[in-house]
Amino acid sequence: MKIARVESFHIVVNREEYAATGEHPVGTVSRRRPSAAPGVRELERNEGRNLCAYPDQAQTLLVRITTDDGIVGWGEAHSPPVPRVAKAVIAELFTPLLLGRDPMAVEVLWDELYASMRLRGHGAGFQLEALAGIDIALWDIIGKALDQPIYGLLGGPFRTRIPCYTGVPGDTLEERVTYAKDYVAQGFTTLKTGVALGDFRTGLAEIATVVEAVGEQATVLVDAHGVYDARTAIPAGRELERLGVGWLEDPLPPEDIDGYAALCAALDMPIASGETECTRWQFQEKLSRRAADIILPDICRAGGISEGRKIALVADLFNVPWCAHVSMGSAVHLAAALHVAAATPNFLICEYRGPLHPNPLGDVLLREPIHYETGHLQVPDGPGLGITFDDAALAAHSVDPYESAG
Image 1: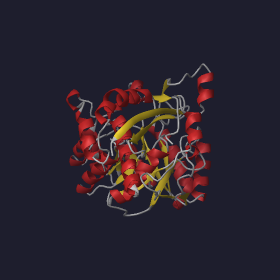
Image 2 (image 1 turned 90 degrees about the vertical axis):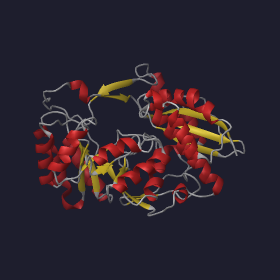
Image 3 (image 1 turned 90 degrees about the horizontal axis):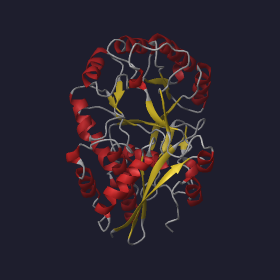
């Protein structure tokens, strides 16, 4: 069995509407603050440090690898602002290195693709996102060839029902409180909300309102998106401890490892971070310096399933649990995370966009949805990833010409 074809498809929600507006052509991005609340006074710091590039529509890059005997594997290179950068990496760098190779040699291929730009310093970002798409597709092929779910290939499962939490959407505090209560009624026992960029006391007061609204029915997690600094992180963390918050996520800029270590030492509440780290080596540095109590690798950002399970193993060496960061990707993103979650002992919980604000790139692209019930996701148990795309839905949402692989 050899790799015969490598393709990728830029998937965009409401492709025709998106391109037809003229105001938001495919691929444009905007800059905004994560979880910024209206009417909040700014901290005295460089505003640009807390602005991120976001796509104007939900979009991703799906990867399809076909073998010479017709087995098709799907992966995802999760690069939401500009997926066509990952597309170029796959087409111009990775594909020539993959054609004619044995897809069963997934670890060998991962190592070669990673090494292809290692000496140029490309150990994160689009390179690793593109590599994730390839790697997941190869695991999908192996599972289909052997008629096994990926978690079985990884030596699992430790579990097949995966606990999950959902973010609480809403532009106003009132909306967030309503969603929080409604999600608790649906069986979620863990929710996540953001903290506003600005006077941290205002943000903490809003979080306190959400915590009070759900009471003892749910644990509230807080994602700070790096808005704190050395002056505000510890007092804010102590107040969140007092409120009973389950964890404080990404309170500082990701480069400030010393700051994270100091924060972990100062607080009893767990500090969670890691969606920006992409390899076992990056996580090893943070963990060896006791700069995270919980890590949050993103399988579609951190090199795929091969690297994701190694990251989980590194965390286990430090007796640290991991949680799956699953943001605005497709069902491939979620399914890949669930398989690694099933097959690793130190897994804690998975991020999931709940049914009250469903992922526009999720179940709509599948023939059958990934099953959710009362705060848990069922790991797909079919061969490979265990999911099947609806060809008509993919064609309708693909910017690139799409044809079924048959």
